[in-house]
Structure formats: structure tokens, C-alpha cells
Image (tube, rainbow, N blue to C red):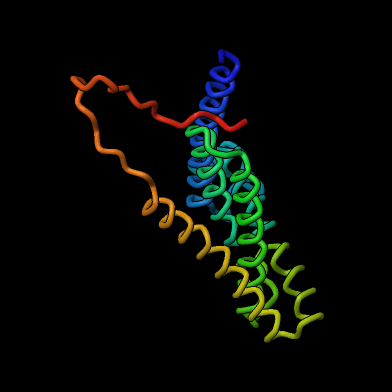
Length: 196
């Protein structure tokens, strides 16, 4: 019994550590400036990013790889932190990573395929990942087919978590609170036991 409690405590601590990390990444992405340290000749102490030098490097790297799809990364961290904090099922972690990765890849690909202007503008919006996957998808499916498949994948990965969350909220079993005077009154724990 005490080992389950220790695992539950470790999960809560991990969830507690993932939440600030998610907000740090989000703040770094929101305050990203192309004039910050890794991209310009400014010194590292003249960083404009809210996350400092580490935030500037983090946001620059994420935008370089994912483009605007980088804003999905903090959402993944928030879900992972919430899952660990509430001792949710570990299988949901794999589902979240799979859905989040698919959303990042398909979103970057859509951003690459929607813009037919210069490669620089496409790179700014889609990142290296979007340009590469968009190029491969265009070669194999054609421009229209690649755009349709990418939009479909992005829409599916956006809609499934929303419907899953709504369904979970609506089908949750609600038990009316009992009075402390009842014989079978128990204080309900904040989370259900871990299934590990």
C-alpha cells in the first residue's frame, strides 16, 4: 500500500514540475523575437524574451523546427502534467503524445502547403519539419491531395480530444454528497487509485 502511495506522490511531483515548464515554453514562444540572441548579433545579455537566454534559445529552436505548430508543444506538456497530477491512466500519455505529434506534423505541413509564396515565408510559418513533410507529401499526393490529407489529419487530431473531453465530462458518474451523520459517510479522495 505504501509503494502505491509513493508512486502517487512521485506522479504528483512530476505533474507539478511539468506545469511550470509548459508555461515557461508558452511564455518563451509568445515573446519570441527574431532579434534575440541565437538569431542576431546581439549579446546574450540583451535578450528580449521573457524566458531570458534559455527562453530565447528554446523558442528559436521550436520555431525553427515546427514553425507556428510550436504552440502545440506547451499544450502537450500541460496535458502530461495534468495526467500525472491526477494520476490518470498511463495509456493516455501515449495517446496524448501520438495526437500531439500528429497535430504538430500535420499543422506544420498545412502551414507549408497553404502558402505558395516564397520559401522564406513558408519556412517562417511551417519550420523545417513542415517544409520537408510538405515537400514529400506534394511529391507523393500532389499539391491538392497533400493539402486535403494534412487538413484532414489536423482536423481529426483537433476534434478527437475535444469530443473525448466533452464525453468524459458528460458521462462522469456524479454521486450526491452524503451527510457526515450517515453511517456509510466517507471522505472521497481527490483522485482515483492509480492503475499501475
